[in-house]
Image 1: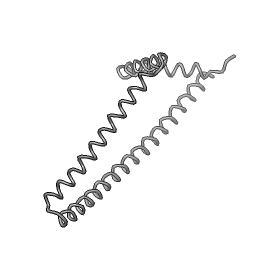
Image 2: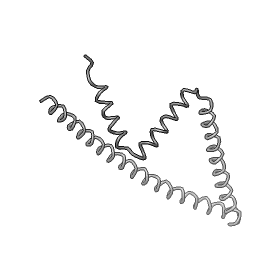
Image 3: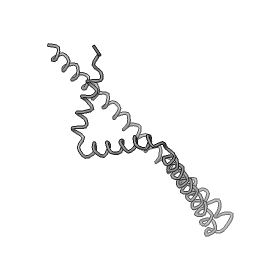
Image 4: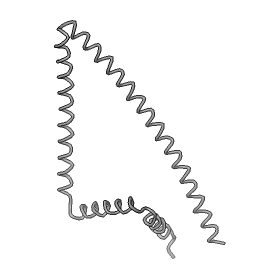
Length: 140
């Protein structure tokens, strides 16, 4: 009788976990849609600001100079972002190079487990589930 109740409890817990995953997935999708709408509206706003800047610059200068100024501004901004990205990757690499041997070993083990789980997730998932069952049992 105890095994039946335990399996029913585990099934109920898994079903509640699946409902939690559904709620989390729905919220994530809502956030992604809202982020895309916000990004689209921001891009439209940037387009109008860019058009206004071009009109104002072409009224002050000739249209070719206005285009060169706006294009140069975008070029400098893009280069700044690319340089910042490159500097960030260097510090990230340096942080991993300065890590202790234990930390690098643990990272390697994590990468190996991730690769094994992506190839064949069934046995790893079953082993993790059984390990959780054994670890959650009260000690006598």
